[in-house]
Image (cartoon, rainbow, N blue to C red; front, side, top):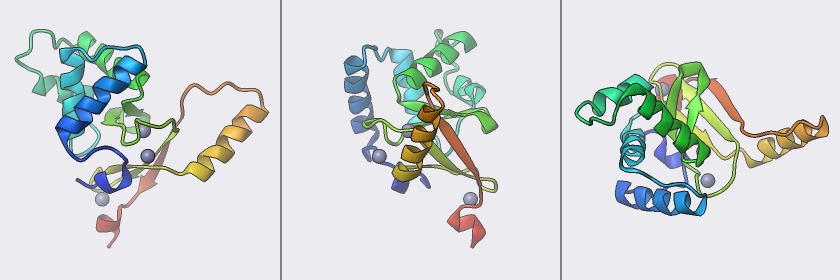
Length: 153
Ligand SMILES: [Zn+2]
Ligand SMILES: [Zn+2]
Ligand SMILES: [Zn+2]
């Protein structure tokens, strides 16, 4: 799991789901069985997952029609439990969902790893610059493409 060392998330899946459930209720949402399943798939995924990859794994579930999977993903984005990486058109479980943050992703072009950085200082500066032009930021996902340590070596 290349992305684990960059994240603040719990190590075990059970702990992650428990934490997600608590955060959802704090943020006014409910982690329904399908949303929970989609989040589980994202947490278990080795790298960013596309919606149709998720659908494939949800095959037997009658509720797993494309629109409901997209709605589940939107819910997870809204709750701050996942991010969408636009350049890959793929989704990842957030590694820092307990604290507010803009997502800064390092994406390896070779192996597809996507690690989420804290980048507190740069994000703070960026937020200040955005606010200085009176733009109200709702979300930010910064995508940095290149080679991970393993692939560059
Ligand atoms: Zn995040
Ligand atoms: Zn963190
Ligand atoms: Zn790599």
